[in-house]
Length: 278
Image (cartoon, rainbow, N blue to C red; front, top):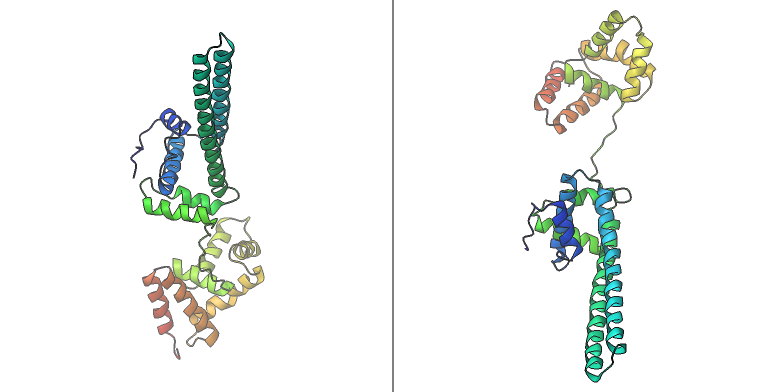
Protein backbone atom coordinates (compact mmCIF):
# COMPACT_ATOMS: atom_id res chain seq x y z
CA UNK A 1 0.00 0.00 0.00
CA UNK A 2 1.21 3.47 -0.82
CA UNK A 3 2.41 5.31 2.25
CA UNK A 4 0.95 8.79 2.07
CA UNK A 5 1.35 9.57 5.77
CA UNK A 6 -1.18 10.74 8.35
CA UNK A 7 0.84 13.75 9.46
CA UNK A 8 0.09 15.91 6.43
CA UNK A 9 -1.00 19.47 7.01
CA UNK A 10 -4.30 20.66 5.58
CA UNK A 11 -2.49 22.60 2.87
CA UNK A 12 -0.31 19.62 1.91
CA UNK A 13 -3.34 17.36 1.67
CA UNK A 14 -5.23 19.84 -0.50
CA UNK A 15 -2.21 20.25 -2.79
CA UNK A 16 -1.80 16.49 -3.21
CA UNK A 17 -5.51 16.02 -3.92
CA UNK A 18 -5.54 18.94 -6.36
CA UNK A 19 -2.76 17.39 -8.45
CA UNK A 20 -4.20 13.86 -8.49
CA UNK A 21 -1.59 12.43 -6.11
CA UNK A 22 -4.12 9.92 -4.71
CA UNK A 23 -6.04 9.22 -7.92
CA UNK A 24 -3.65 6.54 -9.17
CA UNK A 25 -4.03 4.44 -6.02
CA UNK A 26 -5.90 1.17 -5.90
CA UNK A 27 -9.60 1.41 -5.12
CA UNK A 28 -9.29 0.56 -1.43
CA UNK A 29 -6.31 2.88 -1.02
CA UNK A 30 -8.34 5.68 -2.60
CA UNK A 31 -11.01 5.11 0.04
CA UNK A 32 -8.37 5.35 2.76
CA UNK A 33 -7.03 8.53 1.15
CA UNK A 34 -10.54 10.01 1.48
CA UNK A 35 -10.57 8.81 5.09
CA UNK A 36 -7.21 10.49 5.67
CA UNK A 37 -8.58 13.68 4.16
CA UNK A 38 -11.53 13.79 6.51
CA UNK A 39 -9.20 12.98 9.42
CA UNK A 40 -7.13 16.06 8.52
CA UNK A 41 -10.19 18.27 8.00
CA UNK A 42 -11.60 17.08 11.31
CA UNK A 43 -8.33 17.84 13.12
CA UNK A 44 -8.58 21.37 11.78
CA UNK A 45 -12.09 21.69 13.27
CA UNK A 46 -13.77 21.89 9.88
CA UNK A 47 -17.19 20.52 8.96
CA UNK A 48 -17.82 17.48 6.80
CA UNK A 49 -19.55 19.80 4.33
CA UNK A 50 -16.23 21.65 3.93
CA UNK A 51 -14.51 18.37 3.08
CA UNK A 52 -17.19 17.43 0.54
CA UNK A 53 -17.25 20.89 -1.02
CA UNK A 54 -13.45 20.94 -1.43
CA UNK A 55 -13.49 17.72 -3.44
CA UNK A 56 -16.41 18.74 -5.64
CA UNK A 57 -14.95 22.19 -6.28
CA UNK A 58 -11.55 20.67 -7.05
CA UNK A 59 -12.94 18.81 -10.05
CA UNK A 60 -14.44 21.93 -11.57
CA UNK A 61 -11.20 23.86 -10.99
CA UNK A 62 -9.27 21.13 -12.79
CA UNK A 63 -11.65 21.36 -15.73
CA UNK A 64 -11.17 25.11 -15.81
CA UNK A 65 -7.40 24.59 -15.70
CA UNK A 66 -7.67 22.25 -18.67
CA UNK A 67 -9.59 24.80 -20.71
CA UNK A 68 -7.14 27.57 -19.74
CA UNK A 69 -4.09 25.53 -20.75
CA UNK A 70 -5.71 24.53 -24.03
CA UNK A 71 -6.65 28.09 -24.91
CA UNK A 72 -3.17 29.34 -24.02
CA UNK A 73 -1.46 26.74 -26.17
CA UNK A 74 -3.81 27.32 -29.10
CA UNK A 75 -3.14 31.06 -28.82
CA UNK A 76 0.59 30.37 -28.82
CA UNK A 77 0.24 28.23 -31.96
CA UNK A 78 -1.64 30.91 -33.85
CA UNK A 79 0.90 33.52 -32.74
CA UNK A 80 3.77 31.35 -33.98
CA UNK A 81 2.08 30.69 -37.32
CA UNK A 82 0.72 34.18 -38.02
CA UNK A 83 3.66 36.31 -36.86
CA UNK A 84 6.52 36.08 -39.39
CA UNK A 85 5.39 32.72 -40.82
CA UNK A 86 7.98 30.27 -42.06
CA UNK A 87 8.24 26.55 -42.72
CA UNK A 88 10.10 26.03 -39.44
CA UNK A 89 7.47 27.96 -37.51
CA UNK A 90 4.70 25.98 -39.20
CA UNK A 91 6.35 22.75 -38.15
CA UNK A 92 6.90 24.01 -34.63
CA UNK A 93 3.33 25.29 -34.49
CA UNK A 94 1.95 21.90 -35.51
CA UNK A 95 4.11 20.24 -32.86
CA UNK A 96 2.82 22.61 -30.16
CA UNK A 97 -0.75 22.14 -31.37
CA UNK A 98 -0.46 18.37 -31.17
CA UNK A 99 0.97 18.71 -27.68
CA UNK A 100 -1.78 21.10 -26.63
CA UNK A 101 -4.47 18.74 -27.90
CA UNK A 102 -2.96 15.79 -26.03
CA UNK A 103 -2.59 17.87 -22.86
CA UNK A 104 -6.20 19.00 -23.11
CA UNK A 105 -7.46 15.45 -23.61
CA UNK A 106 -5.45 14.11 -20.65
CA UNK A 107 -6.42 16.90 -18.26
CA UNK A 108 -10.08 16.90 -19.23
CA UNK A 109 -10.28 13.12 -19.11
CA UNK A 110 -8.78 12.95 -15.63
CA UNK A 111 -10.84 15.91 -14.41
CA UNK A 112 -14.11 14.40 -15.60
CA UNK A 113 -13.20 10.96 -14.22
CA UNK A 114 -12.33 12.57 -10.89
CA UNK A 115 -15.60 14.52 -10.85
CA UNK A 116 -17.63 11.41 -11.66
CA UNK A 117 -15.96 9.29 -8.96
CA UNK A 118 -16.12 12.11 -6.42
CA UNK A 119 -19.83 12.60 -7.01
CA UNK A 120 -20.48 8.87 -6.66
CA UNK A 121 -18.45 8.63 -3.45
CA UNK A 122 -19.98 11.61 -1.67
CA UNK A 123 -23.49 10.61 -2.72
CA UNK A 124 -22.84 7.20 -1.21
CA UNK A 125 -21.69 8.59 2.16
CA UNK A 126 -24.12 11.50 2.39
CA UNK A 127 -24.69 11.90 6.17
CA UNK A 128 -28.35 12.84 5.66
CA UNK A 129 -29.48 10.47 2.90
CA UNK A 130 -27.13 7.58 3.75
CA UNK A 131 -26.35 7.82 7.48
CA UNK A 132 -25.32 4.15 7.85
CA UNK A 133 -22.91 4.40 4.92
CA UNK A 134 -21.52 7.60 6.45
CA UNK A 135 -21.07 5.83 9.79
CA UNK A 136 -19.28 2.92 8.09
CA UNK A 137 -16.89 5.34 6.35
CA UNK A 138 -16.07 7.13 9.60
CA UNK A 139 -15.53 3.75 11.25
CA UNK A 140 -12.63 2.89 8.92
CA UNK A 141 -9.16 3.04 10.43
CA UNK A 142 -6.52 4.80 8.37
CA UNK A 143 -4.65 1.51 7.83
CA UNK A 144 -7.68 -0.77 7.50
CA UNK A 145 -6.99 -2.04 4.00
CA UNK A 146 -9.42 -4.96 4.23
CA UNK A 147 -12.19 -2.75 5.59
CA UNK A 148 -11.59 -0.23 2.81
CA UNK A 149 -11.70 -3.00 0.21
CA UNK A 150 -15.06 -4.19 1.55
CA UNK A 151 -16.32 -0.60 1.67
CA UNK A 152 -15.32 -0.01 -1.96
CA UNK A 153 -17.02 -3.26 -2.97
CA UNK A 154 -20.27 -2.03 -1.43
CA UNK A 155 -19.82 1.37 -3.06
CA UNK A 156 -19.20 -0.17 -6.48
CA UNK A 157 -22.25 -2.42 -6.19
CA UNK A 158 -24.44 0.33 -4.76
CA UNK A 159 -25.09 -1.78 -1.69
CA UNK A 160 -25.98 0.32 1.34
CA UNK A 161 -25.01 -0.51 4.89
CA UNK A 162 -27.94 -1.40 7.11
CA UNK A 163 -28.64 -0.20 10.62
CA UNK A 164 -27.77 -2.85 13.17
CA UNK A 165 -31.01 -4.22 14.50
CA UNK A 166 -31.17 -4.86 18.23
CA UNK A 167 -33.29 -7.71 19.44
CA UNK A 168 -35.94 -5.66 21.17
CA UNK A 169 -38.66 -7.36 23.20
CA UNK A 170 -41.69 -5.50 24.43
CA UNK A 171 -42.73 -6.41 27.97
CA UNK A 172 -45.92 -5.55 29.77
CA UNK A 173 -45.82 -2.96 32.55
CA UNK A 174 -45.73 -5.57 35.35
CA UNK A 175 -42.61 -7.23 33.94
CA UNK A 176 -41.00 -3.82 33.41
CA UNK A 177 -41.76 -2.70 36.96
CA UNK A 178 -40.58 -6.01 38.43
CA UNK A 179 -37.33 -5.78 36.49
CA UNK A 180 -36.74 -2.25 37.82
CA UNK A 181 -37.53 -3.32 41.37
CA UNK A 182 -35.21 -6.35 41.28
CA UNK A 183 -32.55 -4.15 39.68
CA UNK A 184 -32.52 -1.73 42.60
CA UNK A 185 -33.72 -4.04 45.38
CA UNK A 186 -36.78 -6.27 45.81
CA UNK A 187 -40.50 -6.06 44.97
CA UNK A 188 -41.98 -3.20 46.95
CA UNK A 189 -38.98 -0.90 46.71
CA UNK A 190 -40.67 1.40 44.16
CA UNK A 191 -43.70 1.74 46.40
CA UNK A 192 -41.37 2.70 49.28
CA UNK A 193 -39.75 5.33 47.04
CA UNK A 194 -43.19 6.60 46.10
CA UNK A 195 -44.17 7.07 49.74
CA UNK A 196 -40.90 8.86 50.52
CA UNK A 197 -41.42 11.16 47.51
CA UNK A 198 -44.95 11.99 48.67
CA UNK A 199 -43.70 12.84 52.16
CA UNK A 200 -40.74 14.89 50.95
CA UNK A 201 -42.50 17.00 48.30
CA UNK A 202 -46.04 18.16 48.94
CA UNK A 203 -46.45 19.04 45.25
CA UNK A 204 -46.18 15.37 44.24
CA UNK A 205 -49.46 13.48 44.32
CA UNK A 206 -50.00 9.73 44.24
CA UNK A 207 -51.78 10.00 40.89
CA UNK A 208 -49.08 12.26 39.49
CA UNK A 209 -46.37 9.83 40.53
CA UNK A 210 -48.24 6.99 38.81
CA UNK A 211 -48.67 9.05 35.63
CA UNK A 212 -44.93 9.75 35.46
CA UNK A 213 -44.05 6.08 35.91
CA UNK A 214 -46.61 5.01 33.29
CA UNK A 215 -45.22 7.60 30.86
CA UNK A 216 -41.74 6.13 31.29
CA UNK A 217 -42.51 2.40 31.07
CA UNK A 218 -45.75 2.47 29.06
CA UNK A 219 -49.19 1.28 30.03
CA UNK A 220 -51.71 3.37 31.93
CA UNK A 221 -51.46 5.15 35.25
CA UNK A 222 -54.30 2.97 36.49
CA UNK A 223 -52.25 -0.12 35.69
CA UNK A 224 -49.30 1.32 37.61
CA UNK A 225 -51.58 2.14 40.51
CA UNK A 226 -52.85 -1.46 40.51
CA UNK A 227 -49.26 -2.69 40.57
CA UNK A 228 -48.37 -0.55 43.57
CA UNK A 229 -51.55 -1.34 45.49
CA UNK A 230 -51.97 -5.03 44.76
CA UNK A 231 -49.59 -6.85 42.38
CA UNK A 232 -46.32 -5.90 44.04
CA UNK A 233 -47.64 -6.81 47.48
CA UNK A 234 -49.05 -10.14 46.24
CA UNK A 235 -45.74 -11.13 44.65
CA UNK A 236 -43.84 -10.11 47.76
CA UNK A 237 -46.05 -11.89 50.29
CA UNK A 238 -47.75 -14.78 48.47
CA UNK A 239 -46.67 -18.24 49.58
CA UNK A 240 -47.58 -19.68 46.20
CA UNK A 241 -47.20 -17.83 42.90
CA UNK A 242 -49.78 -18.10 40.15
CA UNK A 243 -48.70 -19.38 36.74
CA UNK A 244 -49.03 -15.83 35.38
CA UNK A 245 -46.74 -14.40 38.08
CA UNK A 246 -44.19 -17.19 37.55
CA UNK A 247 -44.16 -16.49 33.82
CA UNK A 248 -43.57 -12.78 34.51
CA UNK A 249 -40.70 -13.54 36.89
CA UNK A 250 -39.12 -15.95 34.39
CA UNK A 251 -39.10 -13.11 31.85
CA UNK A 252 -37.52 -10.77 34.41
CA UNK A 253 -34.83 -13.38 34.97
CA UNK A 254 -34.34 -13.60 31.20
CA UNK A 255 -33.87 -9.83 31.01
CA UNK A 256 -31.06 -9.95 33.58
CA UNK A 257 -29.46 -12.99 31.92
CA UNK A 258 -29.36 -11.23 28.51
CA UNK A 259 -27.90 -8.15 30.17
CA UNK A 260 -25.12 -10.24 31.71
CA UNK A 261 -26.33 -9.52 35.26
CA UNK A 262 -25.86 -13.02 36.64
CA UNK A 263 -26.28 -12.04 40.28
CA UNK A 264 -29.57 -10.31 39.57
CA UNK A 265 -30.79 -13.33 37.63
CA UNK A 266 -29.80 -15.50 40.59
CA UNK A 267 -31.68 -13.13 42.91
CA UNK A 268 -34.86 -13.78 40.93
CA UNK A 269 -34.19 -17.53 41.15
CA UNK A 270 -33.77 -17.30 44.92
CA UNK A 271 -36.94 -15.24 45.22
CA UNK A 272 -38.93 -17.79 43.24
CA UNK A 273 -37.31 -20.68 45.10
CA UNK A 274 -38.78 -19.48 48.38
CA UNK A 275 -42.28 -19.88 46.94
CA UNK A 276 -43.96 -23.25 46.85
CA UNK A 277 -45.28 -25.11 43.82
CA UNK A 278 -42.74 -23.71 41.38
